[in-house]
Image (cartoon, rainbow, N blue to C red; front, top):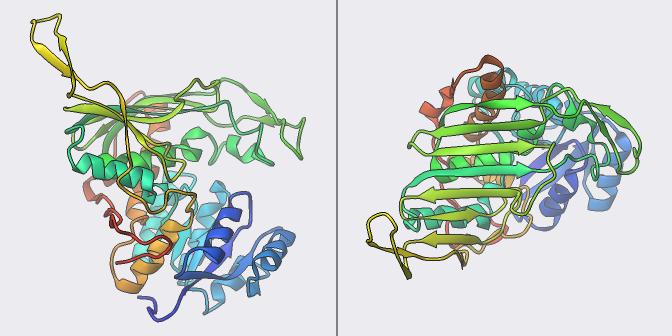
Length: 392
């Protein structure tokens, strides 16, 4: 356990594109964690962070950071194909690790990290932590209250035409190892789904890559051509342990229509949309048995249908961009001895589900998810959770 009489100190590895919101939230908002130091392969990035956010230490490399006894938790915000090596080295140095998504670029690497963390008796977890935001937590409360009954089916869709129009250096999204929409965006959707429904039991589906190259139109690499080395269109089916069956589409190949980033859940008493799991807030549209009487064309019986209506969110805390929420929760868990919500129990199960789609496509089979038997849904945040402070 970590000391509970002071803030938990975070060693920050990687100061790339997504690091800004972590730096903002940890230094300005969360009250129980702080950044003790940073490092990056591009030293200038780390130097800018130290100056802008008044960070005490600038490390020459990650090994110097790992050796610092003042570092309580290592925050790994490197690129997906680097997650394994950084997290492995941190664990071997005796440090708990919180990593950006995914846990690793391959299932084999993820399993190795899981086993190493258990061997060392160290906490390991990571992003996405958007499921702890008001949007998904509110949906969890509505489902628990029986708003749509038991979930029997649904859909997870993330449809876009790639990141090369906005990301400053998007080539890694198309790398053979660690690239593609499933490892990039799939973690948000699958993490949300297993938190709402429970573990995934089996996966089947198909993958393809529509375009062999991509043209970067964002700055500073405008005009650069990227070779595509990974699938960029995934379409399949997830069967959950509770019997629910959800379709899933993750793609960088398609020009999206309205409602292109969505989770829909279909229940025995109604249906609902869940907010975009790439964000923390949002509301719900629900259709349930309810108000307007119609005649059934099949048997003449009265059928009551509640036309889609907006439902207010029962959860208030963390509706804005609260990245580092999962890290703060891990810190509190290590102080109090409880389970972290964004733990390796969750991130490894999600990685196994994400990886299964390519296996299913390549081998023409349904893939059984082995981690389902040991999976435990993270506890919900308390409804009266104070903003930026993590309770027990």
